[in-house]
Length: 186
Image (cartoon, rainbow, N blue to C red; front, side):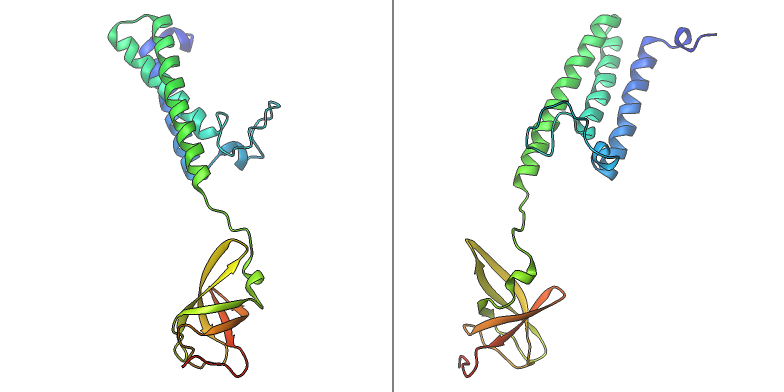
């Protein structure tokens, strides 16, 4: 007996929606599956955006919505063509919404245009007093960007807020600073 003759239209749409949902869950855990397995399919269009219509999460939402809206169409009493059209319309609407939201989120990501090593040798100002053996905070500028970092005294001495220091090294998440020779803020 052929499997397609035993499936009715509602079951078919539910299976499509279920497969799309499983695909969506996997994509949410792993990220973009195309990127995970070697890259987005190349169709000759470079939008310059990392989150597009061919993102696996967008396609998974499309498939899920297609199956869901198609099943709704069958329950309402539509035939195969009308239910498929309703599924297609719902899938496109949801895919566009997810794609636009994804593009918005990707556009909001900040990128660091420098490495921590770029701080070494820079002059900074202590904004939170660095007590002996403890951490404080410094502030400096790299280009137009203001950088605030947790800092420790290289000598283990107290450095008061307002003191001009030089970044001498990197120690994990913090920077090591030293005062300029012969100068300490009182």
